[in-house]
Each structure stands twice: as C-alpha cells, then as structure tokens.
View (tube, rainbow, N blue to C red):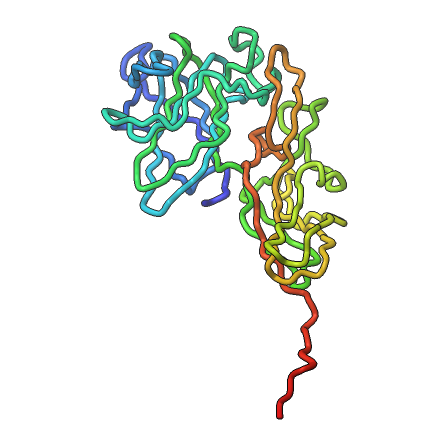
Length: 323
C-alpha cells in the first residue's frame, strides 16, 4: 500500500439552516486503502443517526460512516486512532463487514482502556468523564477481501462532537535482507514515518525517536535451530539506514554474532513487550509491544523469520576413491 499520509478536512454542504446532511451505508465516504495513512477531521454534530445495531454497542447517537472496498487477494491490517487534538467528545467506533442486514462486527469500542491515550493529546476542553481511556483506539483489525468494510464513528449514549481520526496500516516488518555470511540483517518497516520509542516522562503529543543505542529495548532476537548447528544470536550493533520525517526508523541494520550455521536455522526478530503508565489521570496501564508508530499505536504482535545461510565448511570424504 502507498505510504503517503493525507489529511482530509471535509467541506459540509448545508441544505437547510442548522441542518447538516448525514450519510448512510449506501453513500458512505469512500477510503482508498492505497491512500493510507489518512487523517479525517470531521464532526458528528447534526449528521443524524444512520447506523444502529441491537447487541453490543448499539451506536445510537449521530454518526458518520466510511467505506473500504477490497478486491480478491487484498488483505490489510489497520489501526483507527481518535486520540488526537481535534477530538472533543466521548466517541464510539465500529468496524463492520457489510453495513446492513448481514453486518458482521469485526471490532467495536466505546473506549480503548489500553493506556495509550494521554489527556494532553486531545482537546483540552473535551468531555471524557475525566478519563481519556474512553476515547476509542482500534489497535489492530484485519480486513480481507473481497468485501466491503465500514467504519462508523458514533457517540456513547447520545454524545456528539468533533473528531480527528487517523487510519493507517499497523506498523510491522515489510522486508529484510540478510548478509551472505549472516553477519547482519537489514530490516525495512512498512511506515514512511517509521518506528518510534516510548518515554513515559515525555509522552504527548507524539513519541520520541528511538535512541539506536537502546534498540535492544525494542526488538529481541532468537535462533530456532531446527536441528541445525547455530543455536544463539547476539546483537553487536545497530545503525539507521533510512529515517522518516519526523525522524522515525524506516530501515535499520542489525549487526549480529551468530555461530556458523548449517542452513536449517531461522533467525527470529520480534518486538519487546512492556508495561507502563503514561501518567494521565485515571488511565489504564499499557501492556504490549514497546515500538510505536507516530500516533502511539503499537507495533504488530508478529515475528519476522529469516532463513540463515549455510556457513559450515565443506566435508571431505577421506574414504572416497575415484578409481
């Protein structure tokens, strides 16, 4: 998918004084998955209640609906983040396969309760019952085509207001390149801005760049021997090959010390998990991957597997007789 970040501030046409025309499943605002990440700054005030359901979160307030259409073979794992400066009300968020009749709930939230939102990251005059945990953040939901998917921004109870919503692909490994002698691996991430760190003492509005000297606090390494000879790996150095703007890590080289491998082994790279509290009043403790994207949405809970190259010296059959 494309990595160009777009910001959309819609112009709403009023047909009658004081009345804003809403939308429904049949004229939902379209999102091109190749445009992600994308930011919407919008409002549900006066849009009408065009989406409801009977079980779970009922989505009974005024709402706005977005649509993503995927073709056969297209799969994307996205995050949806409303913890941003223009959000000023107690919102609900839902992700659905289909939008009427046979609607299937993929994700629904009336609050993240995940410790990711800080009170200084949202509108200072917003109403959140004193707890920004009530602002929804969908950390990860996978959409698999062919189908039509709908994102509904609603409100808790009858709450309405303004919101700033960022939708993008969940931060993950994109590709890797292993040195022929297994001495280093270059890893590229799927976000044009890149990977950021965490400093609970310096939280909002965006995470700080990772100090590359502390990269071992963000990614771990292991060897799955599969019966091969190499059973251990040590990170000896790390260097940034490409940075985003702001300066996240887009591509990094990990220098490794690996014993001679037979070629059966796999190098495993995965994010470090951690627990902390960001200091915002009443907010939950966070537990999950320590690497973050620029919007404090965690890295995917995934492992990168890399097949090692055989480095064992050739054997000589001393009993071989060519005559």
